[in-house]
Amino acid sequence: MLTTLTQIGQSYQLHRDVYLFKHENVINILDFRRGQFYGLDEIASRMVDLILEKSYQETITEISQLYEVPEAKICGDLSELLNSLIEKKILVTSPPPNKFTEGNLWPTILIAIFKKLGLIGRKLLNPQPDPNAYTVEILLTLSWISLRVLGWSRTIAIWQKWHKSHRKDIDKETIENLDRLLRETASGKLFLPMVCKERALVAYHLLRTFYGCPATLMVGINNYPFQIHAWVECQQLTLTDELAHCEQFTPVISYS
Image 1 (cartoon, helix red, strand yellow):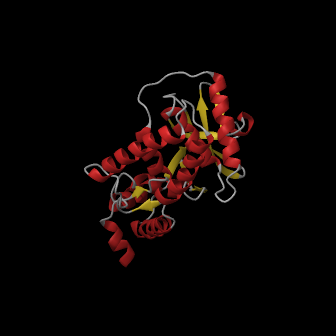
Image 2 (cartoon, one colour):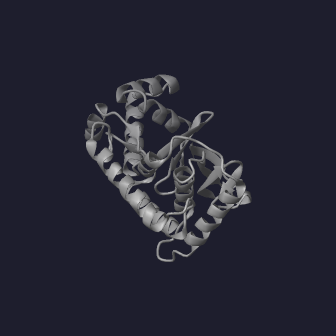
Image 3 (tube, one colour):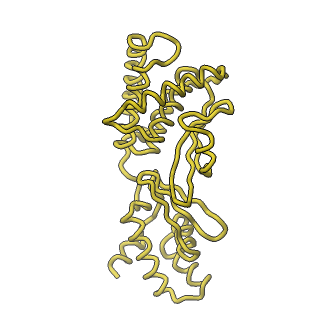
């Protein structure tokens, strides 16, 4: 009962790298950090849906009335479910420490410094208008580190701060050349395996920073067997993987 008492005053939210997908009366959970997918039954789905919006006691009362089950029984089941989801870091009871929040000057300062260093590095290593192999290799390495240190959502948010605000179209040959360069460079990094997330993040970043092109980073899932995949779409072209392979995944998240 001690666990229940501490949970009464808590508020719950999803971990920043976890996504919910509702289908009819059930919820599926995608944990993007670990590449895992969870399915909840109807009652557990209802519990999670309510606990993200209402208080612990309100959730128990509503579930008890809806299914005509004593509150004591619902209380035990809800506590067990919450403990399991918190242990898996699907739910958190308070916002995780985040140095990149509003009101903190350090993110602005660091981003300004990195932008300046990026401009200097580009002039020295990549003076031509199109990205070269050195730039792609550096960005792939940074993406690998960033995703493991900061996680998916925070990495996307920070990298997007470099993107240009204006939008323009580029020719098909330029897009295909970039895709070819990125795949060849990624395949040569034997000690840091570059999977779809790193390749897609860098392609998305290059299209928007070098060209100001409206590329979209896509994330899709395949249930049987469960897989997560990331790729980039730009001007009706698919980058970082073959179109036929990407079509096997149902898009669930996109970043424009």
